[in-house]
Length: 456
Image (tube, rainbow, N blue to C red):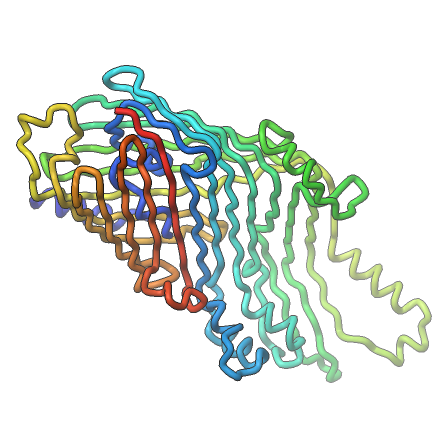
């Protein structure tokens, strides 16, 4: 027991938010191979019901909720916006991930190896919430004299893509299962502006005129799928869908994972997902801004004496703040995700000698454990810690209850169920159940459901 406590403490020290934490390691659901290609399989083959085999959505916003701005409580919107901005910090952000599995299936080719493949679409969107810049746009800079606005607070990365994947899961021995999944990404739409630098400051000048300074500015923004060759917005649906399968925006990546049986009751697993990139080449438009500049306000008397004042001001600005636009291809990394969990099974439901044909997880009616998970955003890793309890109600009905602490909530309880009827596996999972009665007041919400045909 002592060595397992040491392992658990080491896991807690790993840099690792909620990313399908209910599905991970739960009940040998086929979609579990998408969050750990080294998960236990326990069936001969599976076929996902097209479009219905895996539907998931995870919406997260830190700092504020929809109710903070739009609840009908007789408080005007301006006051609500002010109150919301006062609660925000520079580290607050929004993250949305949605997946729809179009096709999926798998087949056990021998006693050790299980092949799986599929095709799904995904929206992955990340956006910081720059409180100071929102206040600047709303109120102007008169009330922020001496304040510095850090441009690195502005960061956005959004991908709409489809993924074709092929994976193999191998049972190396009775204690170790490993797996890898190869992915071909087809990008449909992208907006990326990350790694921005620079500071904007307004100070009182020596003559009473405000002095505005841009120092060390380095901004870059990229987009694909929005503009045509004339730099006009042109979001043609047919053109966008044309990139959904081996289009102009291609990328590659892989997942890797394992499950290791420490003894009869302890199990350790881990996975690394979406280690890869997409190269965008279709309908691209990119721009950069670099330089430093100080401006001492509008001197109207000087303007009347010098008819070229505005042109000189524009020329001076352009000489110091360099801007460039191009339509070159660019690459973006996928948001890497990491999972690791330690599970303890207890409450034997049958004797081992009669169960040589089932996985070791099936020996127990109960399991508890801890799951560390992360997704790496442009501003760094977002961390989550989940404790869980699994209960096998019957051979055909399993449940899982989770409690998650992350950037968005300290009261996130989730529930998952998995049921087998004839050859059908139906599962459903929902997070933050305490907020279901008032979802607008939640900082995080998630659900997942699916139907598979399982052949033993």
